Length: 170
Image 1 (cartoon, rainbow, N blue to C red):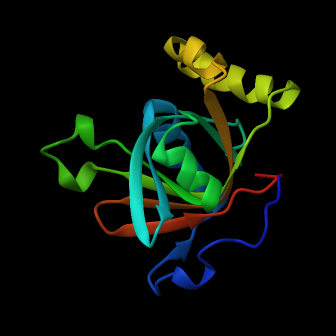
Image 2: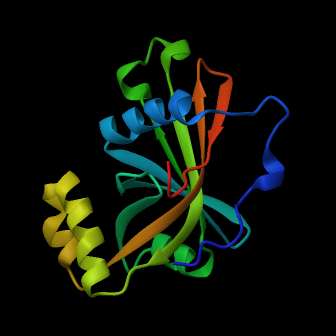
């Protein structure tokens, strides 16, 4: 998968802090493990678009995977622009406690995974997390997208933002 240049380098605000591995990886890992769905953010035709997806991450948090039917707007937009973000949060369990809500935005580049051994590997990861998706993921009318994650932005206590960039040694 072509990783290209890091996305959104110029977007960092002055209060954005690069966090140490241990300080921010743990809450990111918790959100990724505890939440089943993310909002996939894409763009097309000059407009942003968000869609709910069931996801799974690789153990090292460098890749995420999700599936979508090939007849959807989501598939078309992903085929036109590979820059994506996945937003994962825990607000559903904390509706009255705004200061306890945490969210992570994972930015990266998506690529459709061709059928074959790599497809099977990613499909198995997604299905192990979401067994009810097995027939959907395996259907010929479904595409599997792998996202190479270039950056995580973790938000806690409503305004505390920390950045973490996963690496092969993370």
